[in-house]
Length: 386
Ligand SMILES: Nc1nc2c(c(=O)[nH]1)N[C@H]1C(S)=C(S)[C@@H](COP(=O)(O)O)O[C@H]1N2
Ligand SMILES: [Mo]
Image (cartoon, rainbow, N blue to C red; front, side):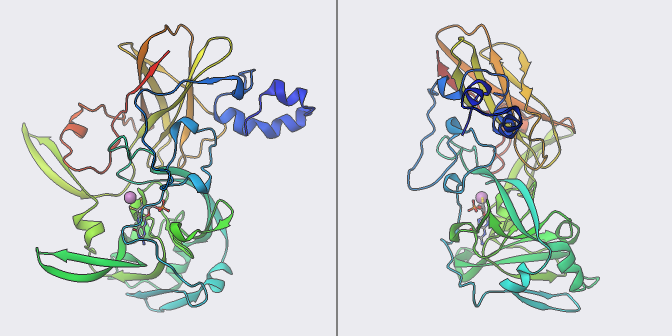
């Protein structure tokens, strides 16, 4: 719910109560906007985002909440939704450990609880108009992975932890060799021992829904969704890099890079997210000012700035939201366009992170020489008519 200061005051809110309203207001850059958001006119995009009503996706034009409600949260499940009975579920930690364990859900929940807010983005998000809402920002709760792994005593030979899901399907390799495979992804030991990785059992204050990995999934802040293994049942420490469809065949980015004047192609397993932003919504305030709002996000490196380009103009700085600055979440931004003329316009944003990385345009070699669909972080122009 969005309330303006004026409306809140007329509704009898005290100044103290107003401070409670600051978050949603400021998140959208509406803290000093005056008129209620509902008095603003939403200007539809000409490049419509096709939405399949049966498949929840983020509708960018409706982006007003910094936290994505679970019913608007996308889901990607390669082998369909797994049904896991909590009563006989166990998480096994085994392989190259001194003390393997099998934890029940109650035992896992009895461990220290930790909450984190983080965005989850599918690495295919943005690769096409029909798949640009595969992102959301949620509050996750669970127990940290690192202390549990350490208690199991990883052996010196362990180089990776493999995270296995309960879901499985048929896979084919070498043209005709077929087998049943469970979903799995791995992390290097240093990554698996990061202190911010959670074995999560809650999303937005509720037990994980079946579609989002009930009873337990992995939370890997700053990494693309493919690493956030759902329906987790087993963590196995191994002595060599794990290879499967989701590490080494699918979810691999093939990209050309220039070396000594020649293009060399590299294939990299999808991992950390790239610097990215999007124009989310355009509104016209009663005073005629057109407000452009959007979101920017990265692999956890803080967003340094967001710039907006209107038609053939120069890049201009957008205003960053100062309320929600968690580096593992999206950063909202806004721009007040004061001299907007009637007619068609193109709006495009680019984010720049603290490491100086700039979100590439579609004709940047980083995008042009990218042959696969994944890691689609190109600037995304949006068209409107005023
Ligand atoms: N076990 C399992 N985990 C999985 C997947 C899967 O198919 N099976 N899909 C992955 C992919 S590709 C993404 S983008 C995220 C999506 O998480 P969500 O469905 O909760 O939005 O889950 C990841 N974890
Ligand atoms: Mo994904």
